[in-house]
Image (tube, rainbow, N blue to C red):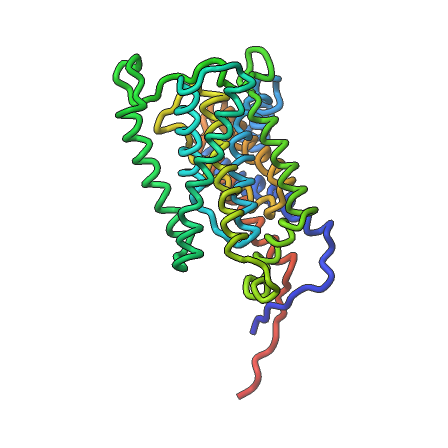
Length: 355
């Protein structure tokens, strides 16, 4: 008979090492499909490392890939801390991108000091409103936000496609379903010449710091943690649980919306229906790898982005499927969940009582 027993006095250092151990184990396990594909493991991983850190260009590409993951990882981490399960980051990302295009393609024309904050604000508001719907349904009618936020992703994507085929369609786009380009004054500045890394990365780092301070050093952060730990006890203590849910929903959706802004106003310059390869869903993995710590989200996003960028390089050089990146990230999540479980609990074997 196996009994699950909570561990006592688990050190914070060990808790902090859990994601690192999980990442290393996942990379070791990823060697199995590499061998099955006929690729030499050490040269393949060396090429993967070189594909991220081999030059300034590859390193900045990794940072560029990490930028939307920081935003969506923060969106998931903030919501999950309150046990508000926001699975709608993908849809909120597209709402933020759509709002950025609406404002940034000529609705307002001004200097970059006016246009960039307006585009960011529009994207944050649109993303926040996208998560406000599931949160309201949860607080008013008890609807499961996992289902409502997930289904809303598909509704939003269809709505975006409709807008790109209709009012937002670029008349100079040769019939392609894409928006008009954002004006230059509304584009986020590039951080390095001839590189794609843009100001969205700096904004993401600043918001990660803000989220960490709010969650660990403010009364509102304490309320969020209290609601997440025990909603009934928080309500009994006089906390406005529903108000916390609404506030968290707006903050989480706004962060996901800013991911969309960073992609259209920092990188691509216009909106298409394939803007995101799943940043909203990958952000959930980033948040879980970071154990819902906003500071850890940055490190987790850099790790995931390194795996994706490095795997692309390895795929081209070694002839290995780039889907190995998805496999590695998935195994990382499984490993961190298992490691987190065994960091907090241990298994005790007991003999079954004689009949």
